[in-house]
Length: 320
Image (cartoon, rainbow, N blue to C red):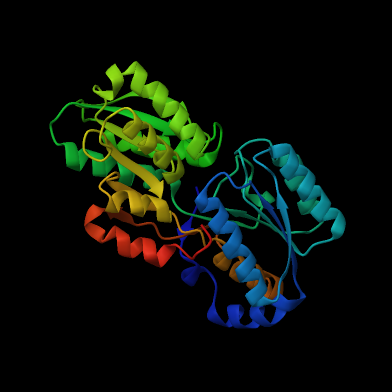
């Protein structure tokens, strides 16, 4: 059973202060999934910024959405003798061997924003949101907003096998369970990309009476939702009214869509996973302070009532 705590409750302030002095001596390898979304780009930008601020030598490797590239990168980091490894895993399975290799080399691994189906003694900690809760918040928003109306939902899933796709789906289904008027009628992966999101949404629209039989779209991330919004508009329908749109991540462009009335709600996933990760690593390296196995970041529901244009202005320079 994983323990959910904030970093403030997990690492003593004295450990953080002492760890900061040690940061300049740290070399950290970062295996990033790729750049499939604006959120992913922001995470990369903020990770590099956090490393620079702390004097950490960051070795960056872009896996281009391929697990084999991530495994090669981790082995390269091990061979280089880095002090720690950050891993944003593209999928949840298939990590045991390479994580064992890192453990044998006494190099702590911190997971960023996604989980792995491996024993938790193979990594130091995981920093992320409660992915299932995100899906549940999105589903509850839909439940609250459709009431007793019959609502056929189409779902754009994230990358097949990834922890966000698995858990955001499970959370959404949990929220709508018991509400027989809400039904997921079509569900397919859009690989977290705008291009694929638009392509899959086009197929959904064709299959569902030109979109007239669709009440709502649930997308596992905002980028797919933005692509789907374009498909809905090209089909002659009004996203945000003819078809409700709820998604996850809270990237800047979804707030532009909300300001235009073309999206309805998004659940925020902060891209600053590196700050808590580096805090935990510094404390661990300094005096052996063990973080909890899961450091939970904050998530928030945004709707059209939250001044989306102002939120866009706030977020647009954060590396998305």
